[in-house]
Length: 238
Image (cartoon, rainbow, N blue to C red; front, side, top):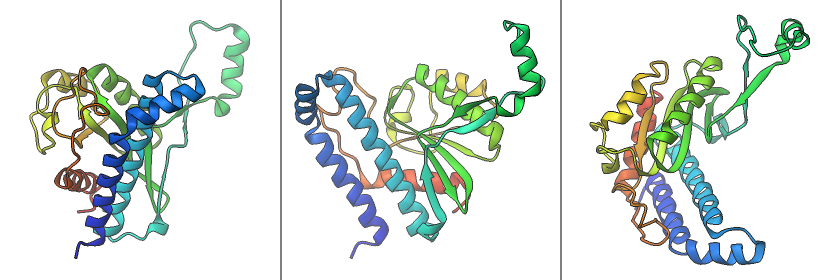
Protein backbone atom coordinates (compact mmCIF):
# COMPACT_ATOMS: atom_id res chain seq x y z
CA UNK A 1 0.00 0.00 0.00
CA UNK A 2 1.58 3.33 -1.04
CA UNK A 3 2.13 5.84 1.73
CA UNK A 4 0.25 9.16 1.80
CA UNK A 5 3.47 10.80 0.63
CA UNK A 6 3.81 8.47 -2.38
CA UNK A 7 0.14 8.99 -3.23
CA UNK A 8 0.66 12.74 -3.24
CA UNK A 9 3.65 12.45 -5.59
CA UNK A 10 1.76 10.09 -7.90
CA UNK A 11 -1.13 12.54 -8.03
CA UNK A 12 1.31 15.25 -9.13
CA UNK A 13 2.65 12.99 -11.88
CA UNK A 14 -0.87 12.09 -13.03
CA UNK A 15 -1.90 15.75 -13.20
CA UNK A 16 1.27 16.70 -15.09
CA UNK A 17 0.75 13.85 -17.59
CA UNK A 18 -2.90 14.76 -18.20
CA UNK A 19 -2.31 18.49 -18.51
CA UNK A 20 0.75 18.27 -20.75
CA UNK A 21 -0.60 15.58 -23.07
CA UNK A 22 -3.55 17.75 -24.07
CA UNK A 23 -1.97 21.17 -23.64
CA UNK A 24 -1.60 22.08 -27.31
CA UNK A 25 -5.19 21.19 -28.20
CA UNK A 26 -6.63 23.06 -25.21
CA UNK A 27 -4.46 26.12 -25.92
CA UNK A 28 -5.66 26.20 -29.53
CA UNK A 29 -9.28 26.09 -28.36
CA UNK A 30 -8.76 28.87 -25.82
CA UNK A 31 -6.89 31.01 -28.34
CA UNK A 32 -9.65 30.58 -30.89
CA UNK A 33 -12.36 31.65 -28.47
CA UNK A 34 -10.50 34.56 -26.84
CA UNK A 35 -8.33 35.96 -29.60
CA UNK A 36 -5.16 35.31 -27.61
CA UNK A 37 -2.04 33.86 -29.20
CA UNK A 38 -1.55 30.12 -28.76
CA UNK A 39 2.00 30.59 -27.46
CA UNK A 40 0.83 32.93 -24.72
CA UNK A 41 -1.94 30.55 -23.66
CA UNK A 42 0.55 27.68 -23.49
CA UNK A 43 3.08 29.65 -21.45
CA UNK A 44 0.39 30.70 -18.99
CA UNK A 45 -0.94 27.14 -18.65
CA UNK A 46 2.52 25.65 -18.10
CA UNK A 47 3.34 28.36 -15.57
CA UNK A 48 0.18 27.71 -13.56
CA UNK A 49 0.74 23.95 -13.72
CA UNK A 50 4.32 24.25 -12.49
CA UNK A 51 3.33 26.53 -9.63
CA UNK A 52 0.65 24.00 -8.64
CA UNK A 53 3.16 21.14 -8.82
CA UNK A 54 5.61 23.03 -6.61
CA UNK A 55 2.95 23.90 -4.04
CA UNK A 56 1.71 20.31 -3.86
CA UNK A 57 5.24 18.91 -3.65
CA UNK A 58 6.28 21.25 -0.85
CA UNK A 59 3.08 20.58 1.07
CA UNK A 60 3.55 16.81 0.75
CA UNK A 61 7.13 17.13 2.01
CA UNK A 62 6.16 19.28 5.00
CA UNK A 63 3.08 17.27 5.99
CA UNK A 64 4.08 13.67 5.26
CA UNK A 65 7.83 13.77 5.82
CA UNK A 66 8.39 16.60 8.31
CA UNK A 67 5.12 15.80 10.14
CA UNK A 68 3.99 19.43 10.19
CA UNK A 69 0.26 20.04 10.51
CA UNK A 70 -1.32 21.69 7.45
CA UNK A 71 -2.77 24.33 9.79
CA UNK A 72 0.78 25.58 10.44
CA UNK A 73 1.61 25.95 6.75
CA UNK A 74 0.79 28.81 4.39
CA UNK A 75 1.90 29.24 0.78
CA UNK A 76 1.37 32.50 -1.08
CA UNK A 77 3.01 34.97 -3.45
CA UNK A 78 1.90 38.23 -1.85
CA UNK A 79 4.29 41.08 -2.47
CA UNK A 80 6.58 41.95 0.43
CA UNK A 81 7.34 45.61 1.05
CA UNK A 82 11.06 46.37 0.68
CA UNK A 83 11.78 49.83 2.12
CA UNK A 84 13.97 52.49 0.55
CA UNK A 85 17.46 52.49 2.08
CA UNK A 86 17.88 55.14 4.80
CA UNK A 87 21.06 56.56 3.27
CA UNK A 88 19.64 56.82 -0.25
CA UNK A 89 20.08 60.20 -1.96
CA UNK A 90 18.21 60.64 -5.25
CA UNK A 91 20.29 62.01 -8.10
CA UNK A 92 17.65 62.81 -10.70
CA UNK A 93 14.80 64.23 -8.64
CA UNK A 94 13.55 67.73 -7.94
CA UNK A 95 13.70 69.37 -4.54
CA UNK A 96 10.06 68.59 -3.77
CA UNK A 97 10.64 64.84 -4.13
CA UNK A 98 13.86 65.01 -2.11
CA UNK A 99 12.03 66.73 0.74
CA UNK A 100 9.19 64.23 0.54
CA UNK A 101 11.68 61.37 0.67
CA UNK A 102 13.10 62.75 3.92
CA UNK A 103 9.73 63.25 5.59
CA UNK A 104 7.76 60.27 4.24
CA UNK A 105 10.39 57.61 3.78
CA UNK A 106 8.28 55.22 5.86
CA UNK A 107 5.68 54.86 3.08
CA UNK A 108 8.11 54.42 0.17
CA UNK A 109 8.77 50.83 -0.79
CA UNK A 110 9.06 48.29 -3.60
CA UNK A 111 6.79 45.22 -3.65
CA UNK A 112 8.96 42.11 -4.17
CA UNK A 113 7.89 38.49 -4.55
CA UNK A 114 8.67 35.13 -6.11
CA UNK A 115 6.20 32.45 -7.18
CA UNK A 116 5.92 30.60 -3.87
CA UNK A 117 6.48 31.97 -0.37
CA UNK A 118 6.55 29.10 2.13
CA UNK A 119 5.47 30.03 5.65
CA UNK A 120 5.54 27.76 8.72
CA UNK A 121 4.14 29.14 11.96
CA UNK A 122 4.00 32.56 10.25
CA UNK A 123 7.74 32.47 9.57
CA UNK A 124 8.87 32.82 5.96
CA UNK A 125 11.24 29.88 5.66
CA UNK A 126 11.66 29.60 1.90
CA UNK A 127 10.96 31.33 -1.40
CA UNK A 128 10.68 29.29 -4.58
CA UNK A 129 10.77 30.66 -8.11
CA UNK A 130 9.02 28.33 -10.58
CA UNK A 131 10.18 28.18 -14.20
CA UNK A 132 9.16 25.88 -17.05
CA UNK A 133 12.83 26.23 -17.99
CA UNK A 134 15.64 28.56 -16.97
CA UNK A 135 18.47 30.17 -18.88
CA UNK A 136 21.10 32.46 -17.40
CA UNK A 137 19.39 35.64 -18.62
CA UNK A 138 16.39 34.63 -16.47
CA UNK A 139 18.63 33.65 -13.59
CA UNK A 140 19.91 37.23 -13.25
CA UNK A 141 16.39 38.47 -12.52
CA UNK A 142 15.74 35.61 -10.09
CA UNK A 143 18.88 36.46 -8.12
CA UNK A 144 17.89 40.13 -7.86
CA UNK A 145 14.38 39.23 -6.65
CA UNK A 146 15.80 37.03 -3.90
CA UNK A 147 18.38 39.63 -2.95
CA UNK A 148 15.51 42.07 -2.37
CA UNK A 149 13.43 39.58 -0.37
CA UNK A 150 16.36 38.77 1.89
CA UNK A 151 16.61 42.43 2.88
CA UNK A 152 13.37 41.97 4.81
CA UNK A 153 13.74 38.23 5.49
CA UNK A 154 17.50 37.53 5.77
CA UNK A 155 17.03 33.86 6.77
CA UNK A 156 14.75 33.03 3.82
CA UNK A 157 16.06 30.05 1.84
CA UNK A 158 16.05 30.88 -1.91
CA UNK A 159 15.26 28.04 -4.34
CA UNK A 160 14.59 27.65 -8.04
CA UNK A 161 12.34 24.80 -9.18
CA UNK A 162 12.51 24.34 -12.95
CA UNK A 163 10.77 21.72 -15.06
CA UNK A 164 13.61 21.67 -17.61
CA UNK A 165 17.01 23.34 -17.68
CA UNK A 166 18.76 25.56 -20.20
CA UNK A 167 21.54 26.54 -17.82
CA UNK A 168 24.07 24.17 -19.35
CA UNK A 169 26.23 21.77 -17.39
CA UNK A 170 24.51 18.88 -15.66
CA UNK A 171 21.55 20.67 -14.08
CA UNK A 172 19.35 18.71 -16.50
CA UNK A 173 20.31 15.39 -14.88
CA UNK A 174 18.06 15.98 -11.84
CA UNK A 175 20.74 14.93 -9.43
CA UNK A 176 22.33 16.41 -6.34
CA UNK A 177 25.03 17.35 -5.85
CA UNK A 178 25.94 18.34 -9.38
CA UNK A 179 28.74 20.26 -11.05
CA UNK A 180 26.37 22.84 -12.54
CA UNK A 181 27.70 25.08 -15.28
CA UNK A 182 30.54 27.59 -15.32
CA UNK A 183 28.42 30.51 -16.55
CA UNK A 184 25.75 29.89 -13.94
CA UNK A 185 28.32 29.66 -11.15
CA UNK A 186 29.81 32.95 -12.34
CA UNK A 187 26.44 34.64 -11.88
CA UNK A 188 25.84 32.96 -8.52
CA UNK A 189 29.24 34.12 -7.31
CA UNK A 190 28.20 37.75 -7.81
CA UNK A 191 25.35 37.36 -5.30
CA UNK A 192 27.05 35.97 -2.19
CA UNK A 193 24.03 36.82 -0.03
CA UNK A 194 21.71 34.69 -2.19
CA UNK A 195 22.54 31.00 -1.59
CA UNK A 196 20.29 29.80 -4.40
CA UNK A 197 19.56 26.08 -4.71
CA UNK A 198 18.59 24.93 -8.21
CA UNK A 199 16.24 21.95 -8.56
CA UNK A 200 15.28 20.34 -11.88
CA UNK A 201 12.20 18.10 -12.06
CA UNK A 202 12.44 16.62 -15.58
CA UNK A 203 15.51 14.99 -17.10
CA UNK A 204 17.16 16.27 -20.25
CA UNK A 205 18.25 19.71 -21.43
CA UNK A 206 15.40 21.76 -22.91
CA UNK A 207 15.33 21.64 -26.70
CA UNK A 208 13.76 24.77 -28.21
CA UNK A 209 12.60 22.68 -31.17
CA UNK A 210 10.96 20.02 -28.99
CA UNK A 211 8.67 21.75 -26.46
CA UNK A 212 7.12 19.68 -23.69
CA UNK A 213 3.57 20.14 -24.97
CA UNK A 214 4.54 18.53 -28.29
CA UNK A 215 7.30 16.11 -27.27
CA UNK A 216 6.18 14.76 -23.93
CA UNK A 217 8.85 13.93 -21.34
CA UNK A 218 7.82 11.94 -18.26
CA UNK A 219 7.95 13.24 -14.72
CA UNK A 220 9.46 10.57 -12.47
CA UNK A 221 8.67 9.75 -8.86
CA UNK A 222 12.35 9.53 -7.94
CA UNK A 223 12.99 13.09 -9.18
CA UNK A 224 10.04 14.52 -7.28
CA UNK A 225 11.21 12.72 -4.15
CA UNK A 226 14.73 14.12 -4.64
CA UNK A 227 13.31 17.62 -5.05
CA UNK A 228 11.29 17.22 -1.84
CA UNK A 229 14.39 16.01 -0.01
CA UNK A 230 16.43 18.97 -1.24
CA UNK A 231 13.72 21.34 -0.07
CA UNK A 232 13.60 19.78 3.39
CA UNK A 233 17.39 19.79 3.65
CA UNK A 234 17.53 23.42 2.59
CA UNK A 235 15.11 24.51 5.31
CA UNK A 236 16.76 22.21 7.88
CA UNK A 237 13.79 19.88 8.36
CA UNK A 238 15.66 16.61 7.70
